[in-house]
Image 1 (spheres, rainbow, N blue to C red):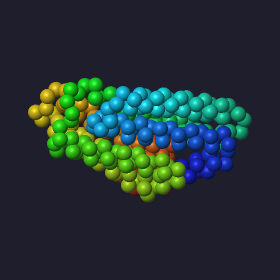
Image 2: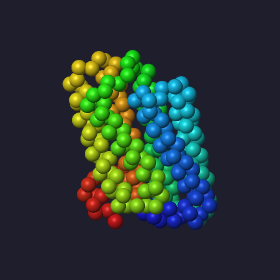
Image 3: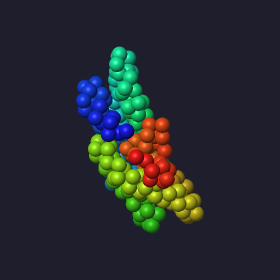
Length: 227
């Protein structure tokens, strides 16, 4: 299905503009996520870094509204019914990317709860690995989506599901730790935000392998049998 979507985007100017705006949204949300991670782990806590994350979030939100307006304007024209399924797909995907921006912003805000740097221990090392996995999947998503690379999408979805499980296990470890309240809260929130960021990246990837009515759904059996 996505191959057909991309073909229509590239052959129809209004739809091509929507696709370009969606690509911009993905890029901005990815940059937000990386910057928020640097702030969260204490590598870059300058006020201007937080401001940049917020400014990018505003841009993501504006692009979401612009794409929605473009979709409505396009579908109001006669003869556009064949593109309806693909416009519905895009309307769903822009919401996922908007949520990615929100969670990146939330991640950058966790530093307000901390009074000390994150500890240098196994739990934080695990969270750093989770961050690396989420960012790597996010970085690959734009290209996988752009060329409708089903094989890579399936592999990234499987890796993403593993990362989500690791997040759940890590929260349990934090709950049994001896951290002070501030540190425990910061680590739980960071873990949950990375799980949600990873989840919305998986939703975008699901569009490569699943039909429209099963978007955001990636059961292993369904993925294996998807055309």
